[in-house]
Length: 102
Image (cartoon, rainbow, N blue to C red; front, side):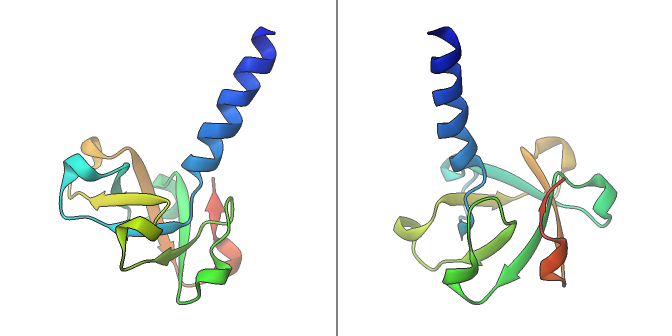
């Protein structure tokens, strides 16, 4: 029973954690994730490819679609200048094939 409950929690939070439709907020208090953009792939938790097409943004893909509306987003993110504040460090790539979690 304990294992089943743990599995359910992991599935629920795992899907939300890998959401790919993203809205940029101006307020840290609204954000689901506080993002720091790294200069180096080796420092990142996730490699992100930004797409213009909503249909490409699938869970577990690392392909992000930026939405104009909060209500459409799976994540609301706030960008910080400080690595120590971040809940997620990302590296933005030009290549779709590199996208995903590390």
